[in-house]
Image (cartoon, rainbow, N blue to C red; front, side):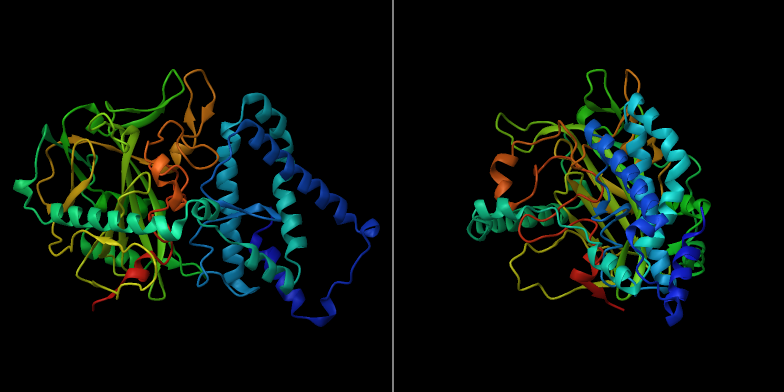
Length: 491
């Protein structure tokens, strides 16, 4: 396959010369039209097989009219989208192409063997050539490049229809009051001393794997300040350096364990085809994300854990159910120092911020939305992060630092994307996530009461990129302006 930059830049160079302006060719006389139609049929066949088998991947959004491209919220941000032509546009399209290849790789892995075999030969022999052909034809003018930029968007994870039928302007008022009470209760919990936090079972620590001493602050600074950036301003971190960053910032989990439901583990498909957690093998899943802050693109390190369930606290606990989990994120400033920490449960619930003293709060929005939950301000930053987690509810109760981290059970670090294709007991593979991004079987009773806020299956576990985190208003964990929306530099 020819490099994408050569394809697009060749088109851009041609557009810069009036004599290169292509004249319309009648379809019957255009030999490339037949090939292009065949290529679109190939993509349509793949997508039809994926849909029929129910193995679609929801992590990235498709772009109507461009079956070979997908997009996430970061790349859909207005201040990331580049002008047509030039190196920025090339880099942007390359990333959209990579997201489609990434998603298709998991979809094809998860296809039944007969469907997979039928597609393999056609894909191997034609897919790369088809991309070359379609991208050249579809982006052959400035107008067509502008059309792609306008079409490339990610819709929010809120249903307007549910909000309309649920009388959202009225029902959101008691929800807002409930959110306020929740925030006050959690802030009160964070204000307690560590020694006064209740312990129902015993405190168990899960620590990073051996050899995870990580980098010094100076080494992290040099790594990020010297990192090459692409034309979009996104840092290009070599895999070995990225591994070192994960080792440096991987947290210790200090959990009040009163039973196996409070233990973290590896996700797997059980014999009865139910997603389950193997607590005999503690695992923390990791991924990279990016955010925009004051005109800069910042690197984020994301760590997720899974519990077998959130056990019921009484006979009518609407929040209990199969599976539970916590996602913890570290946003690094350009100099490698943490700027803010934040976390959520893997349902998108209980999103809270823990900013460092390098940030200050912006004035509250006057709009009709729930405010961010700022649970703790981080002052001391010496040692490794320790996350104190309650039993049962698995609420985060405190973030603190400790230099003594040798005690406890070591966990393994795995790529979070490994959850997009897990082995089935009887052969084959399946994603943990359904085509709508939800984890089947993790539904909560709260969905019967909370649906007017417009979130699909509130309380259910979901895939990266599908976490709506506010009941009132709209907010997603992967919104590229999330930090800048609520904070500004204090320095």
